[in-house]
Length: 490
Image (cartoon, rainbow, N blue to C red; front, side):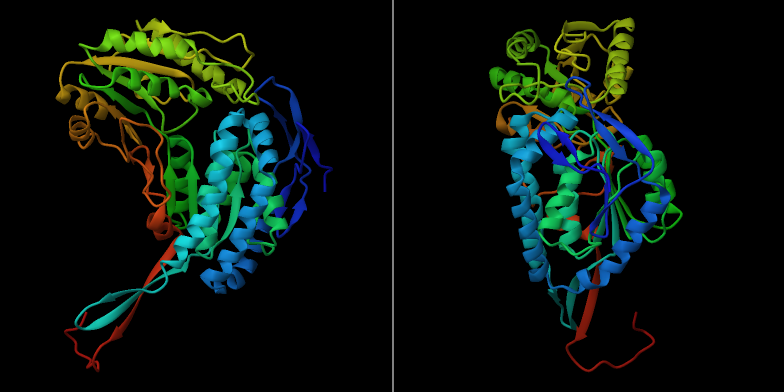
């Protein structure tokens, strides 16, 4: 076992967590902070052999974990949540340093949500037991049985929140889990293993294997022993996972990002819309549900732009570990080069820069909040997910045109619509997307469905929808009168 790393004063293991113990790899990869490119340490890179060990451990642990009652699993996951709370400051500092996530967002949003991801779903599991359906002929008891060994693969923009968002229902349902953390930001998942261990989660119930997608991820998703794969990330990676999983008929859940519209109708509260619009730059717009395509009625476009400009100019850009910072760094040199490339190609195609459009002096991986206009609907900058602080603005003259522009992309994750409530609702109902906020942004509840249509993914997470994926649904049928066999029955 490798000695623990010390990152911003936090001790964290660089090794895997398999069958209740730390496991070191001979192969390592270097990890750097996006804040200042300072080295954080060398991380164990999972081999196919270690993936095999993790799956075998999860298989061994599954019968006993699945046999527990929902109430017994509830006790385990409540202790797990308590251990996350006990390490709350460490999670905040570590993910801010490792992934560049705003410390304020971690403290006030992510850590409380990570705890709730465990407690909500295990409480919800109690409501799913033996749901009856009464018919004249029989009583149908609908059971949500655990599926088996689950693989969870999470992205670098929100490692703790998205891992626990999937882990909560998977464990609450009675499955055992292998987590493959993001290569560029694995440390909070490692600390999560410490919390699980301290909570007394049985060995093999939760396993964490770090590494690259091409080696560790490939070995994981192609294994026929998996019962489910839950992935959040890019469309190309999802296609690759689906192909590997399809060979073994392993069901997959995909949340694949978006290119969401932010619609501002003529009767909108412009100041409210502009203030919310500036929020799209939080976390350097490395947020899949951000509204990145602004569609603004032509009559109010000039006024809206000036109002939003005022809010953007006051955004505090810098070290995400400072409480007042509102825009932090981009995660990795490869990612900032992608962002620069999108902006350069858009400019070559005739896009006008309303603000931003260049690297920011805060550091190597910082980019100015940017708004581009005079962009064609079929252009790359409108159609492709940038995953950086670059937004576009187009105008429309009618609701029909706004809806046409909103729907004319391959993605359909989220959206925002500002306007008089009834008017905005009527427009929102016609936008093809998994969810849409009216005169607001970011309101979420774990009981509600989350997911997208078109290339934004397959399936929904939240409430019953999470359990429908992580469970095998079984109908136990008890007839109400003596059964007589007949060849006409089916």
